[in-house]
Image: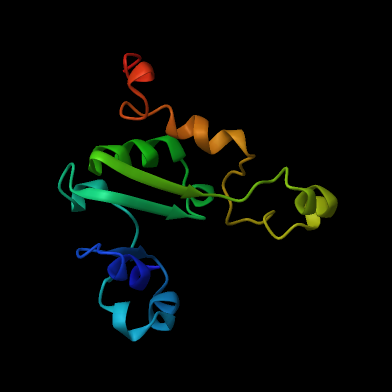
Length: 134
């Protein structure tokens, strides 16, 4: 992902990954762009990102709304937050039930299709029409 972002013109791409093994497995060209650890908003300047990607991350944090709000504060005006989560209501997961690989101790919560959008829309910068709630 970091390589593609750099190729697309994102010159200051940075990754955050808690797993040393995952960093070691990253392509050598981007390994140096990855910080080992967990996301901490205070590590970055406010309004300093054009794009923040959280792929399969929200399931692993105790307060997804707090994470999304932190990301929103780090986005420049017009910036985007890309969220990808498992969908526990997807046909395969419904078929497998408790045997689904998304049912594990590492996932603190599971999402269905409408939930990530509602989490994002709880942030002040989501939609102007909703920001007056904050």
